[in-house]
Length: 474
Ligand code: GLU
Image (cartoon, rainbow, N blue to C red; front, side):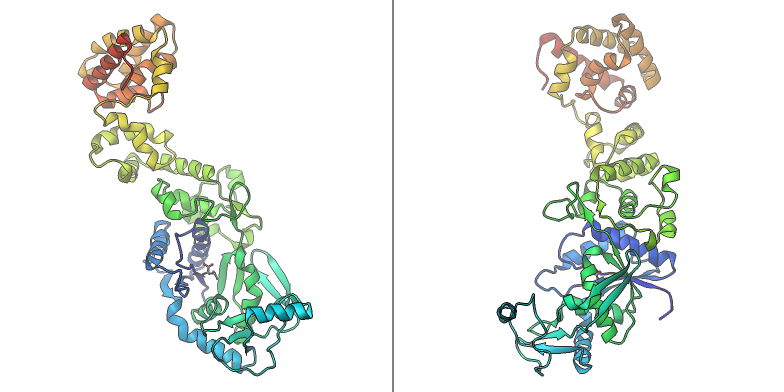
């Protein structure tokens, strides 16, 4: 071993990659990189009934998306738990030989019956001294010693477990296959893992795993259990109830950098964040500042609204070229990218996700605007709307192609609106609905500039004639 820390992230490929997993992976990644250590990706693929190869690929792709790249020198793997099957069995054998484990043939029904009879809570070590050997249906159990087990946790401090309440747990199932508890420890030992940073839900496993480490003659790793993620109701995030798949956020137009920054705030606060009055920090700063000692204990609320606001901030930090490139996958193939690039700087302020982009600017690419009925009713049926739009058309008709730019277009409408004693917000609404179909959208005069003189005027005229005839928008 090189003497530098070896962290690991050990997901089971049994479903979409969970945001909680991503947070744990990032904590490990920050530690591995800032200590000059290693981040081992171990795929715990021994649950054959639930594993799918595509989930493994999903994990690798999702990690790469949040910057945990297999090409980085700190990255090792993926290693697969299934490749260590011999080591799991060899370890079990050693535990039998050293007297730390014994075989038991009692079925769950036998155990329930006996527990009832003796009025005890669970399995009370009944086969400890029966001298059973391996055989079909015989599980291998760990002989839990008397005393207490102290788990030194970097987040929680010392956590004491009374061994009396830990029953002799199973290491090998009746069919001889190792359970999570054993395989996970043996892998960590085989892979030279020095620091286990994982979700809080594994804390109850830890005293048992520490006993296995010690029984195998190793010093246990440094442990750290990071707080669970909860939803708005303070319930643990679950794939049945909540949107938890990282991939889904990616598809909905969350930027990787925003996701990474947001995930890092779940259970951890960047030192100096309060003074700086922001939680937005570049990865490199977070990576070097991250310490397990600063991780807090309380469950972390995965707040989608906050994630969206982080994303909005990250979108605003992009250059126009970056924004155009980032939005590209969400734009219909036939849309003119040059035109999109012209409007992009004007919508940057209002995007919370990249996926919002097409809906904000679609009017520029459609042959006609899609009229939103509520916008039409609210805006086009006022007393002044029709004459004002007529005057606006006349005024805009007098603007040459060369002058068709936003300052001039604004001044032109301002000249018109004084006749109606209106403020700009009200005065521009009929023009906006005529051209874009809606009351909300990018700044109007910039939009008119990008749309061009001829098409803008055409749309104003079409809308005006509909108003005049009372024809409903369609
Ligand atoms: N495969 C386990 C999980 O996904 C790993 C637990 C651990 O990190 O030790 O929960």
